Image 1 (cartoon, rainbow, N blue to C red):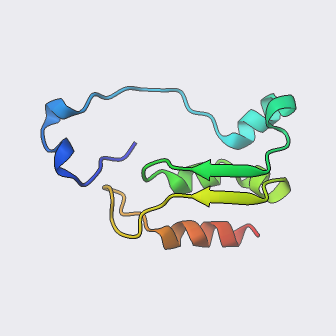
Image 2 (image 1 turned 90 degrees about the horizontal axis):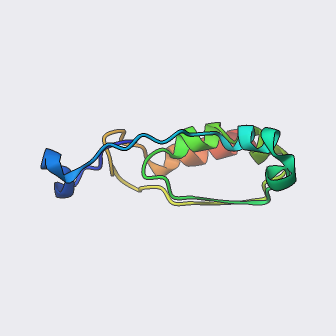
Length: 95
């Protein structure tokens, strides 16, 4: 989703763009409550898209998720320059 700030992606031929359909955790829980209706643990390792994933799971985070394991950068890792404090603010705003 976001280009990393590393030498690996310096050459355009080093990266293929692949498009995947995405759905939020909240939409999955609504469409298939038998499998996604009672989520109590969420682990995120989404390479810079942490806020987008958290925003797509606000209902589940408020209703049933008890634990979140979040891997987020302490310093700029990609073009978005998201920091772990941004994720913590988002999580604390829904508690």
